[in-house]
Image (cartoon, rainbow, N blue to C red; front, top):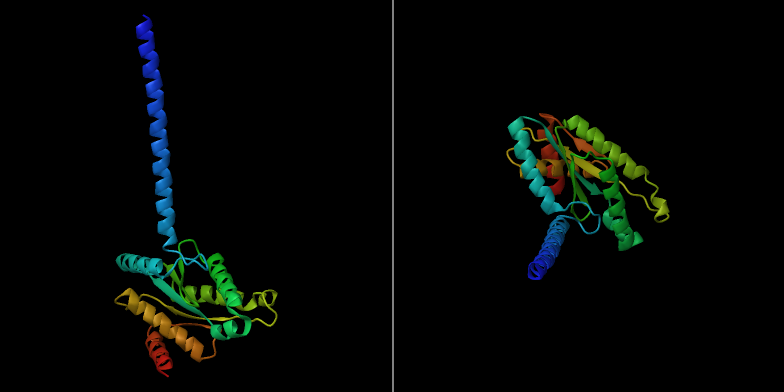
Amino acid sequence: MRRAGDAARRAELLAAQLSRIHQELADTLLAQRRLTDYLADLSLRDALTGLHNRRHFEGEHNRLFALALALGQPLCLAVADVDDFKSINDRFGHAVGDEVLRVIGQLFDTNSRERDVLARYGGEEFALLMPATTTRSAALACDRIRRKVENYPWDRLRAGLKVTVSVGVADNRNRAAPDEQFRAADDLLYLAKRLGKNQVRAADEPEATLLHRAGQAARSE
């Protein structure tokens, strides 16, 4: 009887040890998965603003462009650029310039929808994808953000600081690929710059073709 009792206790101890080991392994695997997910997300984030980066944006643009085509829905793309950003850096310093980019990123983020895709595309340029959105609605949304940037109390950051953005908006109609849509939005952005900055330029067909060419001409000068 004693031997049987000892064997039972040893079996219980062994089972408890195996259970602890199993739990420790499960906790370790969970921690590794969380770390892997964190690093994967980090690779798709812009370190300065915390927004998604160009790599993530381009992947989402390809996905949403194909989805919009399949569903026959509009997809609008806005490309925004901080006006005279080099002058801001030169006059107020790069630390202030970095803070300007962070604030603008926050303004775009808090004033866009959850389903939209926002990214710092590079330098002082931001990109915003708006699924199932008409050109007019997208332009109005971007103009609201433009006004929020213009009216932000920038002098709290540095006396005399003023910041504005220019935006170009293009939809997916008659676009063969995402990069064609991006070029159209980019051309409209350059048109906004040429026509005075601090404005949104968007167009429906057939006017979009004329504005697209005007944007190309602005870039070539």
